[in-house]
Length: 378
Image (cartoon, rainbow, N blue to C red):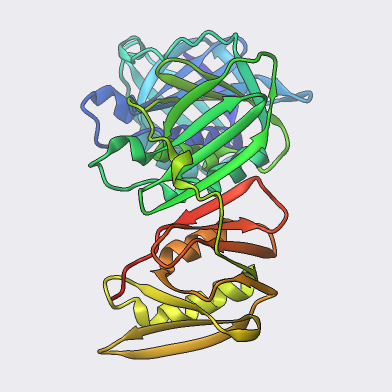
């Protein structure tokens, strides 16, 4: 194998596939990046058996030559060293040549590295996915949907299914739900699909986090294919595979209250900043709890009390308060996570009593819903 390639394209591809390479893997060859050169271009692959990422660099794009293939072939190189070498090479072009004994020479300018390679035939094959049931979603919307839900997945392995985000597709609508059983984040969006199939899959939160780092903020469409145990996200030059989590996701629709006793409309930013200030004193205490109290004339009091440190009280003016008076305590962190994920300038918080879960929605927008369980403080 021998080719010459533009360094910036190589660096970008290596960075993308590195997101799937783990240093802690039971299969030693997976600590490497697989490189395949063919007449069409160069394909890089990284995998940790949960996530696999394949990045393709075409020989030319928009009339510019990116890769010059001298001799097709393949090799696996140690990811950690290869990625560092590529980043620090002196010139804009890189020549990579593999000798018969798998010794790989990487040249750029006056710098020359020799790396011991591994046989690419030993590298596990990527899942083969039949691409007949595809739905499409713009990359920036997909990134957004991940950002607005993935923070609420569970970080504990006691219920592995909750470490993923539940994706449901039906009637041309994608519904993403994440919960760690103390809070829930939900986001829905219309999607383009050629068929009317419905899906119900649970994608690991870790996979979605890595995917969102790779996606561009463009409205280019991403093709998504869901099978029994894999999901594939496909963009112009990238394939991103992730395994799905086994098991049934709990039915979360029962958790979401249908009626409310108290409704408060607040300015998102002002409320977030007040919770942030109140949590300054609550942070030391293990529970990080703030108290929310409705007062006459639409005033809301946000307070926090840590006996050994001190207390904080702040009043903010809501736009409207309807219904019963209310005192409720909740985790400042959960509330701040939810508010940071919200894009609207005004929110409606609906309570059904001091010990019942409450919901946060963007005013006049049904596509985003957050639910938080309160904390007993007495």
